[in-house]
Length: 373
Ligand SMILES: NC(=O)c1ccc[n+]([C@@H]2O[C@H](COP(=O)([O-])OP(=O)(O)OC[C@H]3O[C@@H](n4cnc5c(N)ncnc54)[C@H](O)[C@@H]3O)[C@@H](O)[C@H]2O)c1
Image (cartoon, rainbow, N blue to C red; front, side, top):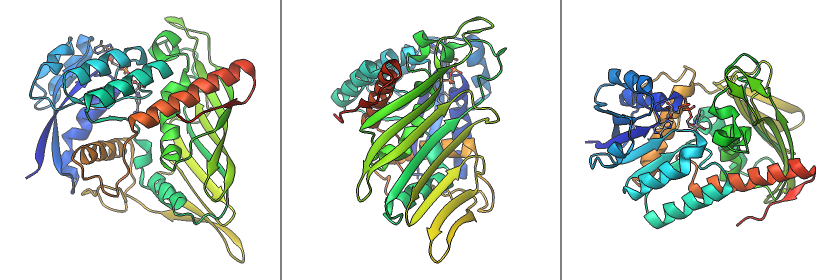
């Protein structure tokens, strides 16, 4: 018998609804040790709450998130709210004695992330941060291949996430385009965690960064916008056996032609691997024998947690989100095994160290060293 886990969501917007969708077809997973149920949602916006009336078993719909925290039936809380609210709400969740799947960027800035980390440690609760793109089978293959040491001397790493969400000047202003609510780090907070998760897990944490940051439209219907929209972080990482390696992290909300493209490439003297969500089934490997070659393998639906979905089909965003939740629950139960784990609070804090160094680099037009704490 699988163990039932009751989950509450604070922030029933774009991401809050995706959780309802993931749990709603949990039966598609063949090897999950738990059975999660979305039992309550808190959102200030009555229209956002209304949508959850169609979710079976989601009986508590409230505008005051404390109602969820006071509910002793709820085991885990997922919080998906604007970045200026992360610290307060994450702290309240932990004070209520519940486990937490936090959203990126895990606090609005470095100070906030450090305080959340301290609170996490003091509370003893299980806390992870959301980042689902590494759960694409092709992304996991890149991770495994890069960990194998079979690439010879690694020459270059490139990890990125490109949107074109801000190209339309008529798109209304919202909290993600304003520093007060998104954070001074702007796009770094919005897309940065997605780009850092795999490199950080490989142990590739930058020692220095030179940042090129660009802003988008300063005004949109409904308000002023002041956040960084595009970021190119040119970093150095020390990789065992390869020495100092250039690693470029790219985060863009102004990338013409890109809807939602997450990619990673690791290239060495003897081998390499790359994956992009533009071709969600496809994994590329590089090999150098008598001739050099890039080989394309259509790996299909080879997810880490097995499902009923046919192996020839292609994975998509709702699938990898479900995989991420399966990893969260497995690790919480102590049965993660060989599966790829969600972003840890320490990794989230390190991403903030990198992002604040990037802001300093942009201001001074210099490369900034990063001390690993
Ligand atoms: N993992 C991902 O792929 C991914 C994608 C998009 C956004 N995010 C992250 O998720 C979080 C939310 O982003 P989103 O796109 O879902 O935003 P959104 O604007 O679509 O939804 C946020 C919701 O929070 C609600 N809210 C605001 N204050 C609240 C409060 N005090 N109590 C309860 N609800 C409140 C709003 O009414 C809104 O419905 C952010 O941290 C963002 O960075 C993650």
